[in-house]
Image (cartoon, rainbow, N blue to C red; front, side, top):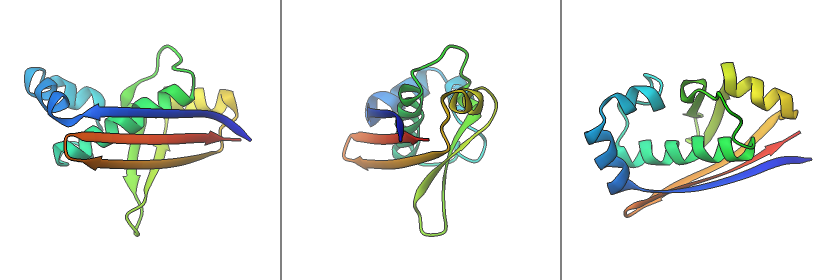
Amino acid sequence: MIVGIGVDVVQVSRFKAQLERTPALLERLFVPDERDLHVRSLAARFAAKEAIAKALGAPAGMNWQHCTIKKDAAGDPYVVLDGSVAEAAEAKGVVHWHLSMSHDGDLATAMVVAER
């Protein structure tokens, strides 16, 4: 059963400019393993984290550090949650995430489906 769906689109150039204006944003939004990625990949991961928040109903108190986007051996993205985001997902009964991310030109996108 679907618990929530989230979609987000990020303009890569605007996201890059924001990271340059506010260097601390990189550490606030991403865990150490994510921080060295190309800005297009960072924008797609940010879109995924936003989409996850939307799928959960954007509960207050969620920490960006508690949501990590990783890739498996085949290169497919998957969601790793802990702390406040894991608690929000557990409260909604989420046991599985479907995640798709993409970037092309100046746009990065992500879509998630949260499932019981």
